[in-house]
Amino acid sequence: MAASPFQAAYPETEAWEAGFARHYAEAVVPAFAPLAIERLRGRRAVRLRLLVAILAVPAILAGAAFVLVRGDAAFG
Image (cartoon, rainbow, N blue to C red; front, side, top):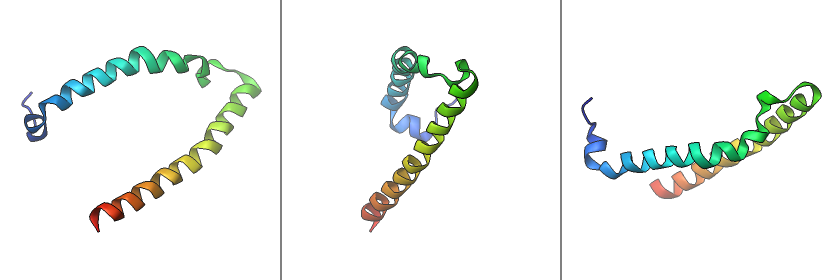
């Protein structure tokens, strides 16, 4: 597969992505494995899904607001 213009301009990005993927697979996934919703059953799973949904909405809105504010400041 031919390298994209971005990959040609920034060859270190591919190495960084590979390192990040390896770190994610070795460190992050096992750390959160006990919280996997798929392993839970019944009311506990419903409560955890509800908690994740409740926490996700403000996090998404805060992230969107941050991007809008920072983007506005960066581009004038």
